[in-house]
Length: 117
Image 1 (cartoon, rainbow, N blue to C red):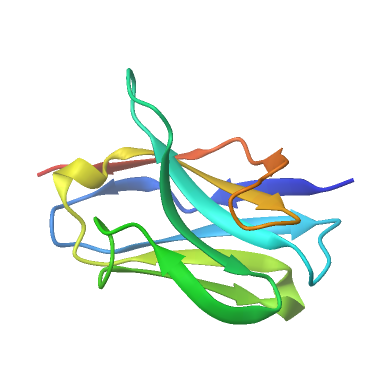
Image 2 (image 1 turned 90 degrees about the vertical axis):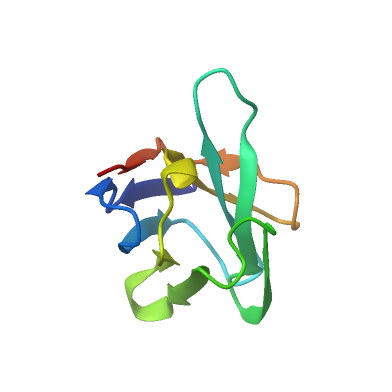
């Protein structure tokens, strides 16, 4: 059974950085891993994704050049490094896993990120 647990959210000032973690259990190397975010009243938005085994990553235009998705095999963890954060990055961030990019069957509970001065 796949389980995903996010951590690392919090309050940060504009221009600051945060690193989100998604500890995954039950994942094999052929899974795709994604990060998404959602704010109240809006649809969930894609942020970043990559295959667990590696390969190139994909990013939403709004975060390109500022966010990086990576993984640590030894820790079974996927990270989202977020730099130069903006108030519009405020959202609940969730990680997801699935057997195809764009098709995610498993979701974490989410972690709140608030960017405010």
